[in-house]
Amino acid sequence: MARIRAQDYDEKRNSILKNAALLFADKGFAGASMSQLATHCNVSKATLYHYYSNKEAILFDVLFKHIEHLKNDLAKVNLADKSPEDRLFLAVDALLKSYEDADDTHRALINDLQILPIEDRRKIKIGEREIVVFFTEIIISNKPSLNDTPEKAMPLTMSLLGMLNWHYTWFKQDGPMTRQDYSKLACDLFLGGLNSSKI
Amino acid sequence: MARIRAQDYDEKRNSILKNAALLFADKGFAGASMSQLATHCNVSKATLYHYYSNKEAILFDVLFKHIEHLKNDLAKVNLADKSPEDRLFLAVDALLKSYEDADDTHRALINDLQILPIEDRRKIKIGEREIVVFFTEIIISNKPSLNDTPEKAMPLTMSLLGMLNWHYTWFKQDGPMTRQDYSKLACDLFLGGLNSSKI
DNA sequence: CCTACCGATCGGTAGG
DNA sequence: CCTACCGATCGGTAGG
Image 1 (cartoon, protein in one colour):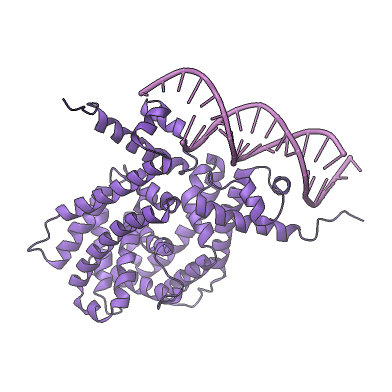
Image 2: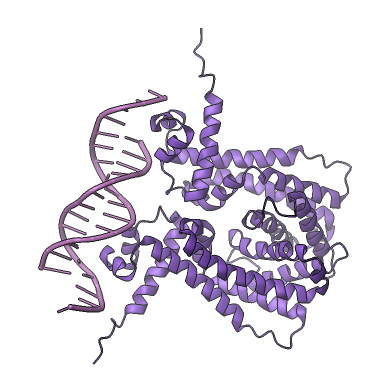
């Protein structure tokens, strides 16, 4: 009989990731200590080193899985047989929804990515770029003439992603506007601008 | 005869602020040590404590002066006798220009503000809110009907500021597009959307 | 000889 | 404004 992993292996690993994201987001990578993380996870510090070889490996796993999660949620959206406008709305709404339980990880990505060694950083950046390309293609399907002015496509995509990625700084969970309301507003604003005479 | 300050007092203080912003932005507040900062400034660690009572006081000064600088640059823009569209463009362009030599400080503000104690944080937030109000008023002058739907004005303002504040993550100094080019594009996109039928 | 940890402590370095 | 340090805590690892 083959040896098996502890039955709560995945559960514990997920607890480490979740608490690490929270601590990294709140105190920054250097400000969050392994001791604090251990306390938050109700395990010993040695246990953390059983799951991860060092602190950086935890940060990498947090950020990498975050990007994978976003990519998965976007890939699940069924865009076939939809109008270009609907495709944009569905993608924007899926991204904001995917951020919903990942605000900590989102903040850790923005604040702490540069801590990682170049090679790890590159692996994260590749995933980020896939998401950018995903949105760029939808945007171009909404304005095919962008194929003639490719130098405009990137700044326009980053303008939309700027709106969405900045969302966490001001959005109030218990305000009058839901995340889906904002998806609609951001899409209307962006598409209205994209189709105006000046762009 | 009254005692005078060292003739290079301001120069040295500015060097501390500039190098601190760079280190905080690159390594995060906790990851940037006072020893490293002293080395970067070519002074001893004790000298830093002559200018600032502790590490947090340096962070506060970096962030507070950054906001003051942004507010000053915006206040200098002459908006009188300008069309609403021109007012928005001038304000957006002034903000992006003000960010030009302050990318480090901008990143420190985004990453490390929450490190500060609540009272200091509040002082920074007050300044940020003044900037938001400044832009909200210009946006409303471009679409007076927003006075009837005030719940839309804030998310719209934050959408514009999201584009501008996210700019540092993708903008390349030596790319084909200048900051002023992007000011124009962001304004056209935003105004086009603002004036479209859906908003 | 493995996996899954624990209490205690290492050599260095942090802010002050 | 320096050298010389401190109490404490850091990330990481020892034996069992």
